[in-house]
Length: 353
Ligand SMILES: [Zn+2]
Image 1 (cartoon, rainbow, N blue to C red):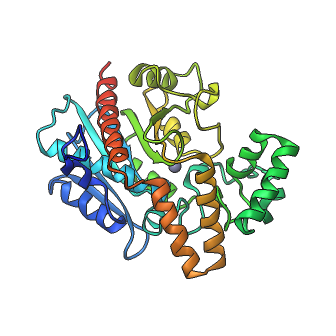
Image 2 (image 1 turned 60 degrees about the vertical axis):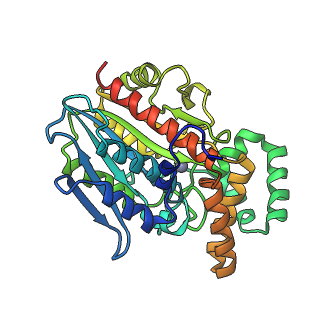
C-alpha cells in the first residue's frame, strides 16, 4: 500500500539525509544560468542563495531554510520541492522572482544543532550590538541547572516554575540570553555568520525597494504536523495587515498572544521588517513536531552534551535533535510538503493583490 495518500512518494525524497545531501539536492535543482552565490563558512560548509525569475522582478518571494541549523532538513525539503516543481513548469506570475536562501546556519545543519559554531541562536542575534545587550536575570539564575543531569535539572526547573510561574520560566530559558555562549538561546556578542550572510544577500540581489514576501521555515514547536504561520510584525503595521490578508485567518501573532511562540528580542524578522518598510511581509512557517517538554529536553541535553565534549553523549543527543526537528514519519513529512506548497502559492498570490 502507498504510504502517503496525497503526494507522489518521490516528493518525500526532498527530505535530505544530511546537510551535504541537502546542499547537493539544492544545487542540482538550480539551473545553470541562475544568479547564484555561495557564502562559505569554511572549506566544507556554506550558505547558498539562488534567484529564479527575471533579474529586475518587482515582486520577490524569499524562502529561507536553516536559520536554526538542524531545522534546515525541513526548510531544504520545501525549497527542493519548490525548485523541482518550477523545473516542471509550475506557473510563475509575471514580474516575480523567488529567492532561495539555503542553510543560513550551515554549521548547525551539519551538526544537528540549533545554534551556530559560535553557539549563536541566529534568531536572537539581530540586536544592536553597539547598545547594551538585553538582560535575562531568570537565565542567570537557572544557568547552572542547565548543565545538570536531566532529573536534577527538572527538579530545579519545577522549583523555579512554582516560585515564578510558567511564563517567567519560558522567558528565562528561551527568551534569549547574551551571557553564556555554551547555553541555549544565546544571542551572541557580535553578528553571526547567518547575520552577515543575510546582509550580503540583501546587497547582492539589490532587495531594497522591492515588494517582498519572506517565509522563514522552522520546525520543532507546536502540534505534530501543524504548519503555523507566525507574524511578528506589530499590529497596525502594513506588514501585519498583509500577512493576515495573504495567509488567512489561521495566521498567528505573538504580539496578540495567539501564537505558540512568544515575543522575542533579536529575531531575523526585524532585519527584514526594516528592509521592506511598508512593502511586504515576513512570516515564520513553523512546523510542530513533539511536545514542548521534548523540545526543551532535546535542546538542553544538546547544550549539555556539547559542553561536556563527550562523543557518545553528543552522538545520542544528535539523534534526538534530528528526530525532534524532522520526524522520519512519512505522514508528518507529507503534511509539511502540502503546507509548504500551499504557503508558496499564497505568498505568490499575495504579492499580486
Ligand atoms: Zn526555529
